[in-house]
Image 1 (tube, one colour):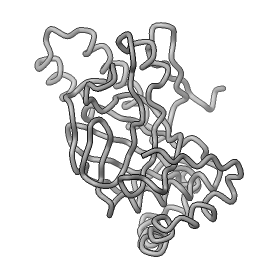
Image 2 (image 1 turned 135 degrees about the vertical axis):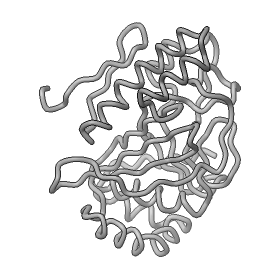
Image 3 (image 1 turned 90 degrees about the vertical axis):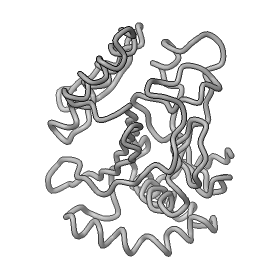
Amino acid sequence: MICACQLTDPQNFADKQRRYPRVRAAFEEKDGPLRSLFAAQGIPYPPRKLFIRVFKQEKILEVWAFSTSDAVFKFVKHYPLCRTSGNLGPKRREGDLQIPEGFYYIDRFNPKSNFHLSLGINYPNQADRILGKKGELGGDIFIHGGCVTIGCVPITDEYIREVYWLAVQAKSNGHSKIPVHIFPTKLDEQTMERLKTTFPNDETLINFWKNLKIGYNWFEKSRELPNISVNRQGVYQFSDPSLE
């Protein structure tokens, strides 16, 4: 499944990716419709910055792109998750079938995936390594094609062509770490109360989601992304990039 392309020249990344037949087919099939979609929504194309959000309970993946004229991210499109595995809650060990929850970024592109095309995320991140159970934490978590998962995010071959090609273009334009935020569900106030009712005896899990909610709220209110770090307890810390 792994065929990471470690290409150091971002300006040539899209050209080099198009040498692979599946990426070339994605470009030929999807570039025109995506260009029209971006134009209709007033977003520059190709995207200079991309942002991906995943909501496990709703089974959707959202794509956002940065609008230079508005200086915020604007919604592009959502894609249904073909299948999920595990339950609500983070991935804490290898083989638990959980889809991770937290704040990640795309760290590799696989144009020859067993699942058509795939985008790897940097699980386990620092928070996962601190909070995960002793032993192997697992890895190789991808957004990919097909409809099979034991912890990944499958969106079918049809839709991964679009998301993969958008990510290739963003990386080619210099966006080296495309953020991917994965949530159990949309963390509004009503949903948080429902989660507290559903998991009344799991204070650790609720506190984890409260931590995720800070990052969720930040983007919901501003359509901007915070700088994110992790403290020694594995808690995400958020700060305004304009103040740093």
